[in-house]
Amino acid sequence: MPEVVNRSRWLLAAVLAGGVLLAAALTAGIAWRHGSFEQTVPLYAITEHAGGIAAGTAVRLSGVRIGEVTALVLQPDLKVRIDMRVDANLLPSLRADARAQLVREQLRPAVIDIEPGAATAPLNTQDPRLSYRSRATLTEIADDLRSRLVPILDDLKQVSGTLRARQGDIASVLQHAANASGELARAATEVQLLVAGTRTQLAGIGNQSQGLLTQGTAAVSRVGGLVEQVNASLGVVNGALPGLLSKADRTLDNLQGVATDLRQISTAAATTLPGVLLATPPLVDDAQELVQGARRSWLVRGLLPPPPSLELPISSHDAAVLRNAPPR
Amino acid sequence: MITATTRLALGYTSMLVHGVMHLKRLRDAGVRDALARQVQLSGVQALPVVGLIAVLLGAIVPAQALALLGPDNEVVLKVLVWGGIRELAPLVTAVVLIARSGVAIAAEIALMHLRSGMSDALWLGAAHEDEVVIPRMLGLAASGALLVSYFQAFSIVSGLLASSLLLDTPLVAEFDNFLSTGVWWHVALSIGKGAVFGLVIGGVCCFHGLHAQAQVAAIPKAAVAACSGSLMMVFVIDLFAAWLRFV
Image (cartoon, rainbow over all chains, first blue to last red; front, side):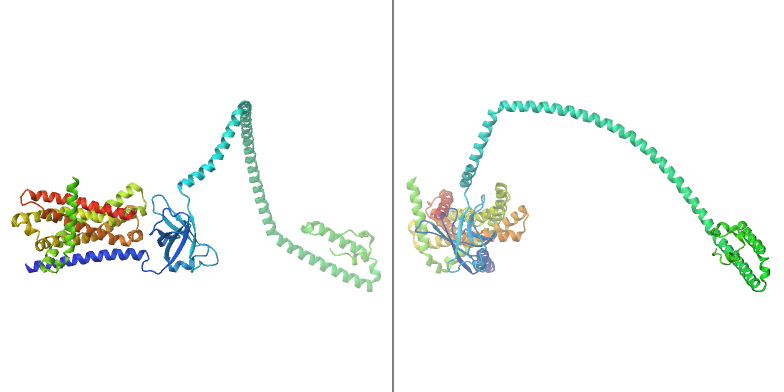
């Protein structure tokens, strides 16, 4: 029995301690989250009307809670001073033109939203006053909207009245518009017919163009065949040309040797046998005839340039001409 | 009607004042034992019931708030703070105390009155009355505060889980938002209300038990009167607290 009593007492003590701990933890957690264990600094703002604000109203910066309203104090001039406490670490971020405004959205509780400002000077820590701007209520927004809409509605009324007065003119304009639309419809029909004819003609031209293209393709094919034949002929010529050129070179060498011999013979004859020279021209004529005959019958006469015309006919029997003949 | 109500109010008040004025009786070990037993009966043993109700209520409140107001996390948390901490915790705990302990206390004292055969003069003697009344009043007050503390914890955890699941938000973020939305002194105020409710329930139930006639039929009458009187007093005090808030 005493064990049961002791167990009950221990259980009772544990449950009581658990309850106290839970309550303390919850209280401390909420207090910590609200910055109760952080260093805070006071701020204040002056407003004409503090409706919607109460002690405990959240103060936010950039949407993040940084503090709360601590008190509302009615001033002698019937304005309201809103005392706030915010996180001290954020005070340097607030500039001299920092502003506070009340934000109320739907069913959400009101919050005071601080705009940090953009002035170069920081907020005065000796007199940390924020300018206050209250957001318009729904009634004020509705009134503003009504004041904006009324002139527009008046203008609409005048326009509709003018239109009513001009109803006859509008009817004639509509009649003209109907006529114009009928003419446009007819023009459209004609354009359609024209387009159909053009389409038919384009189809014929297309067929003709296709035939021409077929013929052109065949001609190109034939030209290709000819080109291939020319290429084959040129290949044959290229193969035979080196042999012919070597033969021509050898023949010219032989002829040059003959001419040299003849020149030596004639020179010797001129010095030793002047009388014999008188009998030389007929020999020269014979030799020349032999050469000419060889040239005319030689295979390479077409490969050599034609001989230059002599200033004196070979029948003049002038030996100087033969000695000073231009190179062939 | 007015006379009866006035008499009851005076009786309740005199009982409460008498109990508070004789707190020195706690020096007596017997009274302390009776107090511990009362806390055990009406506090520790009621914990499972109160915990279950808190969990269910904590889950229902965000669901109903979301259904009524749409997916607004801040409103849900506000409702949770209002329901879980400030209002529902003391009220539900008081109802549980009345149903579980208050009626039993009234019936017990009435039965003691009936079986002891003691005269009214003896019952009205300070010693006996204090030994009966003070442990029960203070026991219910301590139980009320204890149960409110647990009710808050259970309902808040359950509510945050429910809102996290319904809104598909991280539980840690929900908890952080809840801490931002809550007010620290609401916790203490709620626990204080729970203690006051328990004290009043104890006083009312003791009053009806002590003033029951020495008849068997008087026992259920005393229980019914204790129940209705306690409920009425709880709501009157709650209304008074709400009125104080707006003054």
